[in-house]
Amino acid sequence: MIFSADHPDEALRSKAKGMKQILVERGLWPESGKLLARCYDGCKTDATNCCAEKTLSLQPDFHAQKSLIAETIEAAGHRCIFYPKYSIISSTFGVQQSITAELTATTHGKDSSILSQKHSRQLIC
Ligand SMILES: [Zn+2]
Image 1: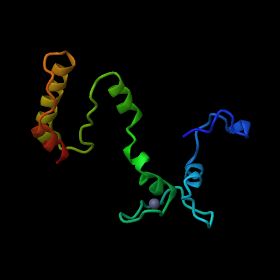
Image 2: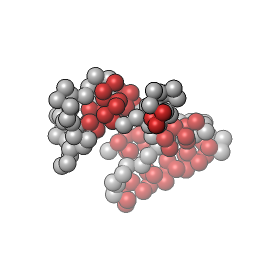
Image 3: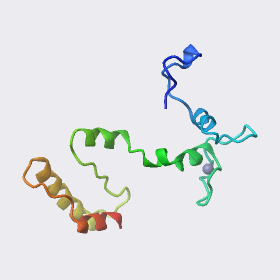
């Protein structure tokens, strides 16, 4: 998602592309030439092209993109698991402790098992 090193405009060479540039290249920029970068009050749940951010978020490659921290952790040979953002600490703390203990044991070569289905289900809730 960067301009090529031989881009005709020297100021853009090897620079990150913006949302508009990406949408234009994919033929998703509206012919009217106007599109909000982001809906002020949040996108409607069924909207698909209300703003640039929503349109990009629905693109398969953007949707499948892992975060830089997840890629970095996995490239180092570890698994990256995010705990629920908003959790009730008293009810999930025990689950988090057991997962952390299992991952610690895995990291140190004591156990090569993967997370159990039980833990995965509890994290999704
Ligand atoms: Zn929107």
